[in-house]
Image (cartoon, rainbow, N blue to C red):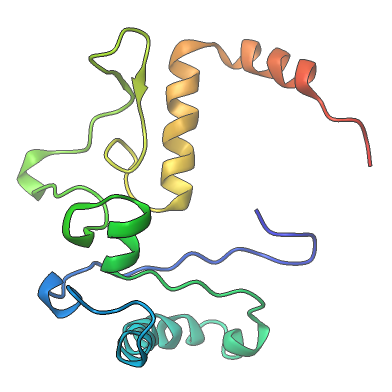
Length: 147
């Protein structure tokens, strides 16, 4: 996902603040930008404990808010991932949907929320249809020419 010489760092905290604090804010307003920066600050400080100069080294930063999740992920009230009580067990693995031949994957299935987990969920779904050997054969068929 990152160009050569760069890395991707994906950090998030549980979205525990009330949606009402974000609801109705204009995404182009100074108030929204300030609230977004304030929300990101806790993450920056946590990452800086391991990478002190991370802000200076970051070349691209993207901060999501409940409004981001609502707009781009079509999440009701800006939720981040499904609500699952600890007593309910784990998220289900890839499963067939009500549509014949269509598998469910993504942040509402195992292993859960976040970019790496969602990518793994897609891989698990793919592996439930084809064997690893078949996948490797498909990748060989699709192989791009060398640069």
